[in-house]
Length: 128
Figure 1 (cartoon, rainbow, N blue to C red):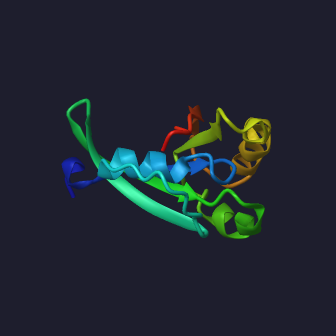
Figure 2: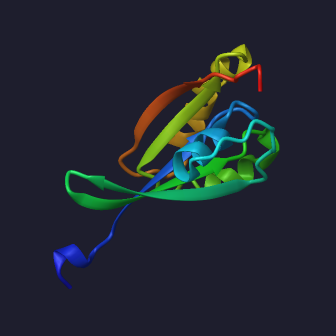
C-alpha cells in the first residue's frame, strides 16, 4: 500500500453537561444548520466533516456525548482512541463551568491517545 492510500481521520469527543449546546455546535459545524430547540442526546451521536489541512484530506469525526450522568457508562466507551477533546460549557450555566474539571478527569481516564483538548464557552441565544 502506498502512503497516500491511507485516510487521515481524527476522532474528537465533545463533552460537557447536558443542555450546554454541544449538539447544536456540532450540527452547525458539520451540516450548516442550527436548531434552537433542545433535544437530549441519548448516549452518543456522531457527525463528520471533510477538511483539507496543509493540502491533505482529513476526515474529522465529532462524537457528541450525552451530558447526563446516567449515560456515563455508555459515553466512556467512546473516549477510547480519540485524538482530541472539546470541553464545553454554557456561559449562562455556572454549574456547567464548575463541572469542567470533572469532565476533564473522565476524559483523561478514558484511554484516549495523544489528546489535544480545547475549552469552549457556548452562549445560548435567549431570543431563540
